[in-house]
Figure 1 (cartoon, rainbow, N blue to C red):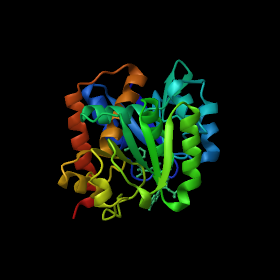
Figure 2 (figure 1 turned 180 degrees about the horizontal axis):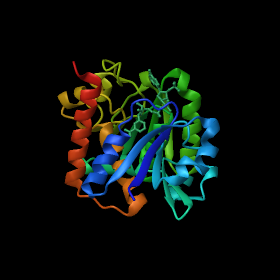
Figure 3 (figure 1 turned 30 degrees about the vertical axis):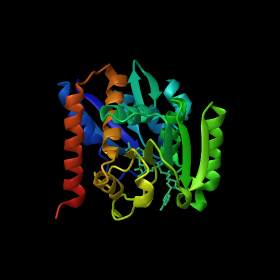
Figure 4 (figure 1 turned 90 degrees about the vertical axis):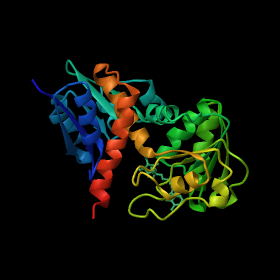
Length: 281
Ligand code: NAP
């Protein structure tokens, strides 16, 4: 019987998940159907016992990442650490959840030869910042959280969580960024489609950073990444994180292993596909 997978969210607009997962299944010569399912939060529990229980596995996006946890039979350490699940395996009538975000981020850096060490500047204090800053702190990096004035409270909560878990962190506003950093992480949506002409920090501030990771994946090259390249600063784009997260999902679902060269090709193809969808004249 053909295996069935899906991505669930609400609302679920355009998502790269079907493209990326179909390509990964094709690399393993596995024939699957991969759907996009818009599930109203109020119906999540009902669907968990209905449509979703008939699948082999599924990916989870906003707003279900946290609310799905009590509906699952078990979750692993990655899900417990972030109190979020973005990947579910259904096997022998039982459901298992994990979070692939951190793996996607660290593999994206590693595959591009960027080290997660030293002084790390994280822009933003939302969902992505939480994962990226925690991974940096857990590897012994000193984390500086930089936010706009309205985000200070959120940044304080995030700083407390990092420090409570053994990390070291400080906070500044975007205007106060100063000094040198080993890695800059943009975890804000600034520069994202349809506003690609925006950058979260100035070129002067950017020049103090040795490498840049931009979580934004649309466009492939944000203004921040373009400016970094012009200054010979090493860059990693958000699509690499998205694809490596999907790789982790395949490992979780059926123990798949991939050649990093094939993953690099899928990242390139996913960027081309996104260009076709969003920027075709
Ligand atoms: P989020 O939870 O809404 O957090 C966004 C953060 O950015 C908040 O701290 C927010 O600050 C700040 N922010 C928003 N607009 C800003 C602006 N104009 N100037 C300065 N700061 C601003 O969003 P998220 O889920 O963390 O996502 C952030 C970005 O990461 C998005 O572009 C998303 O697509 C991307 N992402 C990528 C991946 C990947 O795999 N590549 C994974 C997850 C997320 P306030 O509190 O002040 O609003």
